[in-house]
Image (cartoon, rainbow, N blue to C red):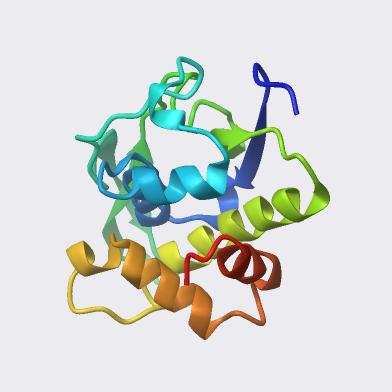
Length: 173
């Protein structure tokens, strides 16, 4: 694979909650998780100018709310609250600048189909793991760990076969 190119994976925004977008950004940028994610990504993305990381990022960063009034079918009015996430710079590890997708820019070009499929599985697993109802933990801090994510993948290894195989091959289990 070329050393000056990368694999970018786009995730449809419409299928993600604002919490999930924030969680994915926090997970990918977490300084304690970067060495783990780097093994999957195939490169140290934390030192790459095309996918800069920010270890201080929080789930709620770039999030604001708009308020409005909605008229119900019976004529009553109710206050609405809508979360809006401001976009990031294009050259961040998790680019939210695209209109319809968020873009993971962390991956090296895959050397073979197994690497490609493992990275696609990682992205799917991360999206699924970011759903607050998919994996029970005592705290958000506990969920933002390698062990929590690995446990989720192992419990669902039939769903993420290529990622699970990658973990076994790289002796990460």
